[in-house]
Structures are given as C-alpha cells and as structure tokens.
Image (cartoon, rainbow, N blue to C red):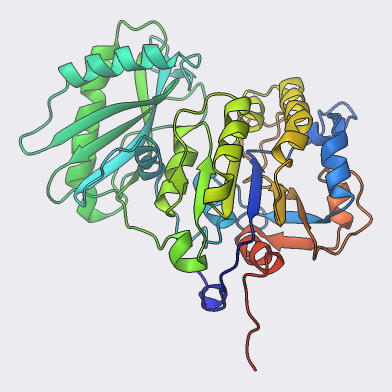
Length: 402
C-alpha cells in the first residue's frame, strides 16, 4: 500500500512536526484577468513564512487526475493514494466513531433536493442544519425496514451529510455511486461493479426507494445521494510506520475519520479556529505530529464563492502567528487538492507547498501562491513523498545503505 523504504529508516527523537492543511487550497484566476484566490488574498504572514522556507508544487495523485478528499489526505500522510483508496463511507463512519464490523458496507450520503420529475436541483439540500439532518435521520431510522438479515444504520455527520451502514452476511462494497455529481440530472441506480455485488446493489436500491418515499414531503432534503460504498480494510498506523505519536485537530468528521484510520488521536468537539488553536496548545506536549485542518477554503471553493475563499485564506493568515507560537521543528503548509471557486469543485491543479525547518534550503520565493511556488527549490513533487521529506527535516530518518 506504500513504499516501505522510509518506514525502514525511521529513528526516534523529540522533534515536532506541524502539517497545516488548508483544504482545497489551490485555485484559478477569476476569469476576469485577476489572480488565484491565494494571489488576491492579503497574506503577509504566509508570505513571510515562505520567505524562510523551501517551496514547490504538489501533485496529489498524477498529472491531470482530480483527487477526492480521501486520496488527497492519505497521500499527505505518506500512503499511496491509489493503493489505499478506501470509499468515502468508511472515512465518514470512522469520523463519527461508528464501530464498523467486518461484514459492514458503509456509504456517505447527502440529503439533496429533487424537482417534481426527480432531477437533482441542489446536491446539498441548501446545506441544511445539523439539527435538521438529525430530525430527518430519526424519521428514516423509524421508517426503513430491509430484507430479513440486513440491518441498516443511518447516522448524521454534519449539515447535509450522513452515513448509512448496511450490516449482513455476504455484503459487498462494489457498488457504483448514486450521486450524479451534477445538478439537472437524475440520481443514478446503485449498480454493481462486480458480479458478487448484485444482491448488495439490490438492497441499496430498496433502501433508496424507501428513503425517497419517507422524504417525499421534505422541503429541501427530499432525496438521498449515496457515494463511496466500502468495507474497512485496515491500515498500518503512523506510529507503526513512522514512530509518530500523531493527533488530528480538525472540525469536520470526514477528516477526523481519515486521521482515525491511520491511527491518529482525534480531538473532539472543535467548532471554531480559536478552539483548534487552543487544542494545539493543550496537546503540544503529548504528541510529535500535528494535523491541523482547515475546511472552509474547500467549502467556499465548492460553492463557487471566490471572494469567500479569499476571506478564509486571509482569516487563517491572521491566525498564523498564534498557530506558530509553539516551537515546531518542521512546519508544512499546503492543501489536499485544489478547489478553484471558478470551477466550483475539486480539480487536478497542483498545490503550493512550503516546508519551513532549520534544514530547509531557503529559495527566492517570497509570496505564497501557486505561481510563485513554481520557482521554489522543491520543484514538482508527488504528495505521497511529502511525509518522507518532513521526516527527513525532523531528523527522523537514518542514512540508507553503508
């Protein structure tokens, strides 16, 4: 699932590594001759950090391949994003602490809005509140009954997002998404991608039919879109691979889930940037790897909100001195993928990267953005190799060979 060369070279010390990940950080110009969101944003603190760092660009998967959040984050943590590609359902279930069993198949779902003909007009149901989600999930749990021997668990994640877990003997996760990923289209059938998943796909189809009947009178969330069917296959932890005591400081369940899957401890109940910074301070002495995740850069990009994404970047820039007030030996700033507001979704574009450490080769980059970082000494890297670089700067890798 990953090259084990770095794993075999690990040595222990007391160095501390910070990964500050601005989800969906990369962008595009606004189409009117202006720069990317990062270029437009006022970022004196990120720029100052870049001026004493090594800079470059990251390719999350491969040139031209648009990554999902899962592969993007697994790559950040040093796992091959292709070989470790686990469905979104497992990630979301782990994020809310759902106790998955070996015979479970999990899927992420969105409450969505469909018109009278069944076509999707809003894939996120107006981003309904988490409280509204909980009410609707309760109704679904009370009303849905599948074939004998199949249990179904319907759990709120956050806002319009949820997790459904199917439990029964012989179930398969080899099922296509029902989310068409575009408005104006009908939901897709949950078709099997393998002959052994035919029965499982029929069970999911029955679930969708019952759910739609129960949701018919809902104003916004009157249908469900499912994606990322999967079973939990298990991963070697960051401690097992790299000797890292790692902690995730994230607000959104999915990212907590990915962190949990690779063995990080997860700080619960964080709802503000101030709370995240407080958690960083409170847990500084207990860990040596810190995953500090910012979601709203991605959210504003997905909403097509260029100015909103600029504002989030500026907010994090203002908080950067507080984040860096602790003594980190290695600071990495980047994203998991690009989410240009101009495209209102994930894209294949490379990401800006900086690595600040005592051993960084400081280059000529003095502005932290996608174009400036092109001139950095790190050049073009694949994201899966970033962890190895961070470990090297932290003096956590011994020499290879005699």
